[in-house]
Image (cartoon, rainbow, N blue to C red):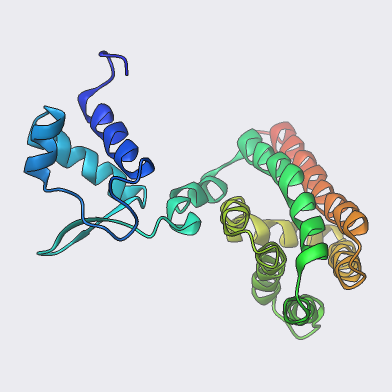
Amino acid sequence: MDDRTPVTQRAVERIKKMIASGEVGPGQRLPTERDLAARLDISRSSMREAIRSLTTLGVLEARHGAGVYVTALRPADLLETFSVLAEVSRGDTLLEVLQVRRMIEPAATALAAARATDDDLRRIGTLLDRIDGAPATEAETVTADLDFHQAIVASTGNATLAAVSQGLSSRTFNARVWAGHREAGFTDELREDHRRIHEALLARDPDAARAAATVHVMRVERWLAADLADRDGAPGA
């Protein structure tokens, strides 16, 4: 590692290397802060900052009175900070998030068509009913929509894919999508997208599932691009 790398970052990298090499694994206790600092020849304050950084990232956890442990290293925990991306992104960055979703979500939906169990499909169908349910409030529809897509990706059995997909989703943005489509009179198109995805899953047809998911994400992407253009062109924007 470059000697110009900040000391704390070097400590972070050394601890990650210890974990990657198997020297200390999931659920195991890290050597004490004093021992680590001595071994890596850095100050205890720098080591403390490195441990704090890795704790924030979900790699380590401090147990009161028991020391610092490596977490279970589950994808959902390690990617938790990534989930902030979709929630706080705006403008062109949010459009980029949707473009990444267009790369990932259709592939995940195709994989779900091949792997989903009968129980998975029943759950997905129940969530579709909630999206379509006339008595539902818009907030309930937004929640059901998010749960629908997350249930599809979860049915692939790939925890890392599920964590990444969830990180690219935003309740706030989803509510904005439904509100915008409602104002334009296009909510039926969103519901039809979901029905086509579900039909492809039931048919166990990966190609149809991929196509249906692509159409859905592209619809939302086009709506956002138009909405951003309108905002940019609005007086005083």
